[in-house]
Image (tube, rainbow, N blue to C red):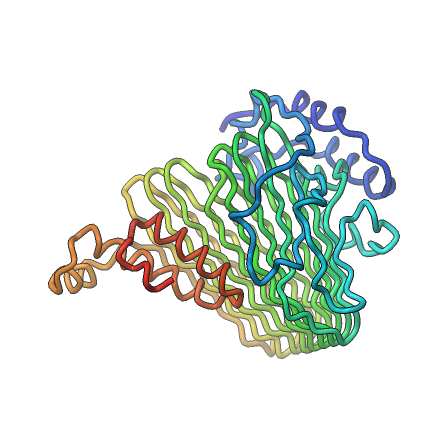
Length: 426
């Protein structure tokens, strides 16, 4: 275990930014930061993710700048796109002209009075969530009013760009409120170039009978450190589907925390991580069933190559009295090299006696019989390997409802698996 000298890094973060607004939230977060310090591998939930690479880096706040986001533009969201660069709103790259009446889709700094729920869901025991809450300067606010159905996807782009030799940091923030009977599809995208740290917080509330499909894409620089905390609350007869696809980051960690708050709430939580080199990807999820008649489904997939490492720790918590809960959890890992490693720990904690709950995990390599079958039909060994690797991820990608995004992500997986002859599938 490598001990991390926490004080200089904390002081650097806290002293370089002094944003205004939300003072009570910031004070609580800063107190937690100073009290808990930066997590080390001595903590159970960080035992496999060593933050020592952060020790010698002196991060400075990222500056506002103009960037070319043309490659990230989704045709379906040309009039429903909000862009942030290094945590700063980029109005010239944003376009919100194509929205139904009453939908609020704007930056937090210009709409602080509308963000009443901000900070109410985010965890207080997560170091990087507290870092965001203590020093974020701006973010995106999405409010879909009662009974409104938004057809076009709402695309939020958080772009990071290192300028100069010093590594930078950004604190992306997103608050989503789906009111009663409303529905929307949101694409939350994190991307960048250079060396930086991004510590993001996303809060989601889906009110009764609401419906939200939430696509989250992480394609940060391979030199980047990406930490993302998702806190969601699903209310009576509401539906929340969240899919996180991760490609980038030297070290990345995702901590989704979903509360099934009222009867009839339904959740579909999915994840895919595609790793290579010496990347580390860590997912710690928590699904909290508070009341009866909740349904949750979780599937997490990992493809690990070279000397990369993936960690999955998923907990489903069924509280006393949450009868008739139906919760299923599955983690599947694919190892492509002898040096790659996947650590998985699915968990169920059940305090009700009338439930239907199950969990499982499977980690393995490509099936030799499947490889032989493809090779016997003319595929080279390398192409047979790549076809099976792509197929492992394809079923999850096929569910993405935004056509252009689905094509983009398929192309990325095809490029990473080098399954070039499968391009027609995209």
